[in-house]
Length: 570
Image (tube, rainbow, N blue to C red; front, side, top):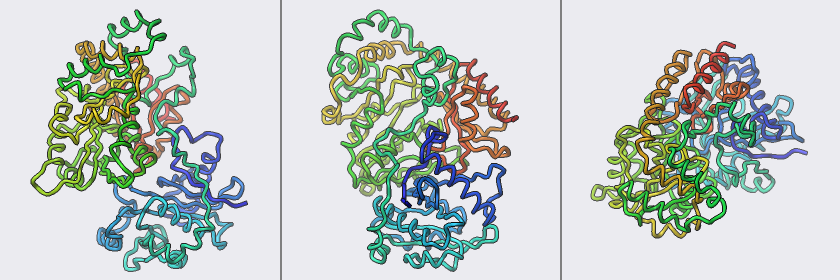
């Protein structure tokens, strides 16, 4: 029996698993190589016989559990639509002229491919109808794509407008850009969509993918865990300050037995005094993820227009698209610019959105924007045209690593639209305890959405002691900076492109001459007990070669380099 299944781009934890999505991904990658490398000569043939599709979402037509064909879709391309790499600016401008002027959420068909033995049986049309149904469900008003000359009749049958004047040659095949109005397509073929049923294998209720795959290897066997190098998450390689360990250890029995202060009053007072902000402006919870999941759905609605940086910490996009389902615009940061922010462009875009979310220093890039205060003030400035922006959320989880870093916490008293979120996990070595806070003048309104006892008693005790011992942590940060410089130098010497950063992680590009994918590299590292982060699922899908390394202790960093050398030499 034939059926359609929909799923998001698999991540490193999914690949290699014995499940349908992993199996389909292998078939899709092999099919794409057969068609685009061997048949159309669009890409160089690979010895592996694998060519991964760069799409975000996939709809596969299968018989049993075997692939017939698939279509891949990008709802928002991280660095502009991928077809802009192939066509001129004039061609892209012509496409944009065809967009719905009131709603410009556009879906891009990345690839539509059917196995050779199934061609000529209308499967391509089935997949296009499925892509139309998916795009309509995601509230896209327009669909763009590129297709080679031989399959244009199928697209015309759906109502696609082919820009015949513009073309590009890849191998021996001529490709043309195309546009489809979802509204017009529904009027034309909408009745056929009732017969299109898609099983959704994208678990929208699942948590956003993070690092932490090492737990699958070790479980709670801490002897085994001690043999691994866990550099795929950004937990601190140094311990909490001795005062925190002593205070928790001294009262460990009570910490397990008794409920903590209901609203974390003493912790809030300590945060306020340390940071120089009013205590009534402070909210606390069990980690920044808890604050994000509790507060963002109260600040934003389904029809909100939200601007985020791209690439950026992926949990924000997960909440915006899967939980709130609002309209998200990606503000691209480019590798050629070392992922630095275009200040003027960001301000202009932000003022046209209901909300903006920035991470500073950014993850996974490690870039710190010292002009963020000016940017926020300009976004919210009145008197020079109306700003639509009602919420500015700044995540400063890693700012303690920045020498002379300028937190925006104090600005929250002047701008009610501003919310500053701070995890205490990474900079204070409290990841396992789970504690974070947000500073906002809206705290009294948002407090109702934070549950009582949101922070455990050991976490409250540990956080208070950590805030009271800044010298200890400053010394640890200096060690991290030195270790980062040494690790960066070693990776550069091995042919990696290392991007400049300021925190406890390094974003890199794999050596281009090796033609190794980030997913392959990560799996090779894991075989040696080294866990690093494939940055592809963090918005870096340009060429599947970005890897992020957490900066660890010197001995662990040395193990990382030995592992990388072995992989590069194999």
